[in-house]
Structure formats: structure tokens, C-alpha cells
Amino acid sequence: MEKKLGWKELPECDILEAGTAKDFKTGDWRTNKPVYNSGKCIQCFICWINCPDSSIVTKDGKVTGIDYDHCKGCGICAKECPPKATAITMEEERK
Image 1 (cartoon, rainbow, N blue to C red):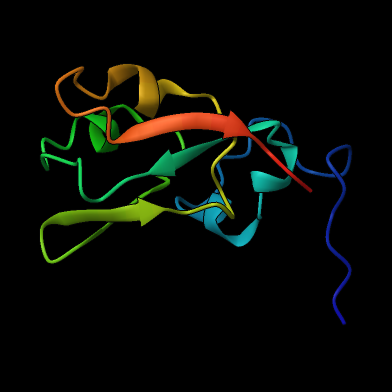
Image 2 (image 1 turned 180 degrees about the vertical axis):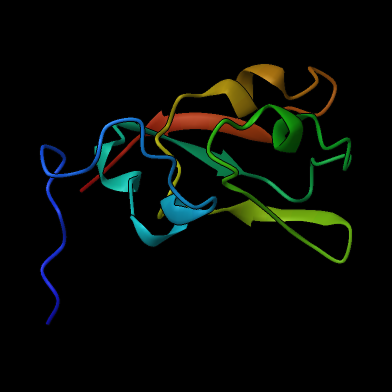
């Protein structure tokens, strides 16, 4: 097994290949999690546009859920969800 470099061993000013964040599950940090209600979603994609972690899951041009492996629970999706929809709400994470 190849040993991965620690952060102190990485060369300065190194630019990493795009998309490497998908290899690391960062959702474990979360204390609150978004809950998606498909019955209320109006498919406006405002949550998808604003999610800093690309954790809004889409399929065939529709929002289908949340990628909990990468969602850090910032709540931006719930905050930006239009009041007439409120398709995403936040709840305390249970571990």
C-alpha cells in the first residue's frame, strides 16, 4: 500500500487535481443535517446552486436528495429553500 503524503510533506504552491474532495467523506463533522422532503420540492435548484459541498443529489434533471457522505450541515440549502416550498429543513444529527 502506497503511503500518502502528510500536509507538511506536500510541495508548496502545489495545485491539486480537481475533484479530489469526492474521495474524502466529510459528512462526519456534521452536528445538524438537512432533511429533504420530495413532496414539497418545487425543483427550483436554489439549494443545488448554493450548496458549497455539491451535496445536493440530482437525477434526470430533478433534485432527489442529500449526499450525507459529504454534507457538512451548514444549512445553506434549508435557508435558501423558498418559503413557499420549505422542502429542506434542518434537524440535529443523531449518531
